[in-house]
Image (cartoon, rainbow, N blue to C red; front, side, top):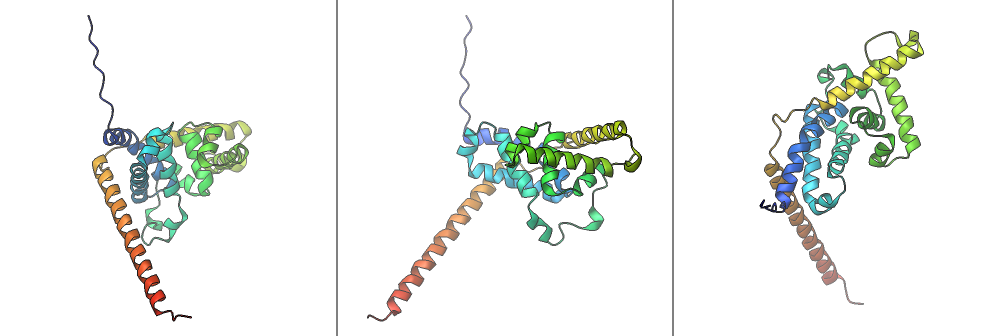
Length: 231
C-alpha cells in the first residue's frame, strides 16, 4: 500500500523566492538587450521584483506572474527618465554586440515588441496585450523593427538585396536576438531574501514619510485656523 504525503502549501516568501530564482536571470538579460546598459539591466529586474513583493497577493493570484514582473521590468528599463541620469549612458560604453546595438536604433515601443515576439516567441496578440496596444499597432511596430534590425546587421548591402535575401537576413536577425535573450546568467544577482528585505524597508520608509507629511499638514492647518481672526 502506497502512502501519499501532501506537500505543505508554499508560504508567500517561498513562492516569491521560487519565482525570483527562475525568472530574474532572464529578466536581467532582457533588460540589457533593451537598453545596452548592464547597470540599468540589473536595476530594472530588481525594481520589478521590489514591486512584485510589495503587491504579492495580486501577483500570486495573477494567471501569469512571469508576465507581470516582465512587464514591470521592461517598463522600468525603457523609462525615458533614465536618459537624464548622469553617467548612466556614455558613448564609450555602447554595446559591441551588433544585435544589441541594432536594437538601440529603434524607438522604445518597437524595441520592446521585437524582444517579446522575436526574442521570447510571444505571438503578436500576446505582445499587444502585454504592451497595452492594439494588434494592428503591434504588428506594424514589429514589421518596422525587423526591417531596421535587418538593415543594421552586418551582411549584404540592404539596398541591393533581393526579396529572398532580405527574408533570410531578417530571419537570421530574429534568431540572433533570440539567442541573446537566452544567454542569461545568475552570476552577481541579488539573493531573493535581500530583495524582499529591501522592499519591506522601502515600504516602511514610505509609510513614515506619508505619516510625517500628514502630521505637517495637520499642524499647518491648525496654525492657520488659530491665526485666522474671528469674523
